[in-house]
Image (cartoon, rainbow, N blue to C red):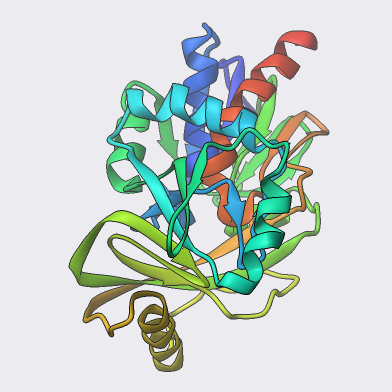
Length: 298
């Protein structure tokens, strides 16, 4: 069995894994990242950093803390575009106002809905590349995890002092935490939107994204279907008032664990299950992971 000398071994090189690795390394810990690929589902063309979720206007749990953490972290590594417009039908506005009451979410009401001043969007490709710089990342596929022992797809056994599972849907079987898997797609557009708009679907940058597909209990790779493209275009037309012109598509699968994003597992911790909110919560939970590690040294 090969012994890995790094203090921390992070499994996964999406936004959760790379953010955690960066925060831990910046705090002086020796970190090794193992991943079959860079990004995974985090290679989505655009990521919204949105504290008010869905068409019912639910404020995300810990939204204030997450906003503070992401604004302290992301602008050091990439361009972050501030502000998200949420069109809100007039009959729904009272309910939205009630949900925002007593919450510290900077916003203002406009004729078409609500403008979230500290919400934002970013383009993950440049962010992931920047976060990867300076990290010890090795491209390895882990097939099985048994506490502190990792088994590669080639059958090699690796021993780590502390393991952080920070992968997404495709590797969720390694930790066996259950959860839900949701496929979705994003269309690349000829038109560019500097201000993000979101209601049912979203537009930001050169992207139109969203999903109507049902949750499943296991992971299956997703490919964008023609009917999904049509649904996105029709939903985009309702959002914008006109039909956009697509030029490409991206497909992925999200993994969700209903707020149990950081938990102890044999050999270390699991930092996973953010669903569509991975970019929103990653900096906050990377901080919390660091606190947990410092509280329980190896």
